[in-house]
Image 1 (tube, rainbow, N blue to C red):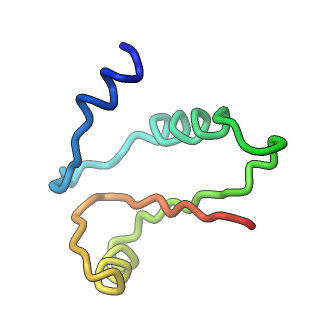
Image 2 (tube, rainbow, N blue to C red):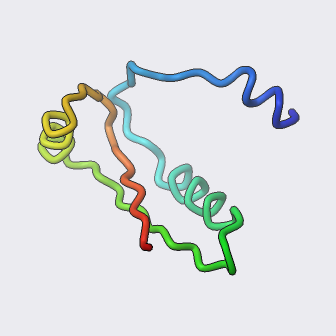
Length: 79
């Protein structure tokens, strides 16, 4: 599948299953991100996996959003 097809067929998911996410899938996503280019290979970012339901609810209320996903991944930039 080429990039254009991927972008053309993308979709926004707003309803999530309350099913745990396989740790290997999460690690594969992080590995793929690590392989993406960054200026001088500085990789000025980090990730935080949030899986505690009470923390996800706090984030939802602070962001005025309602996400019902079993995990959240916060992307943090380091300037």
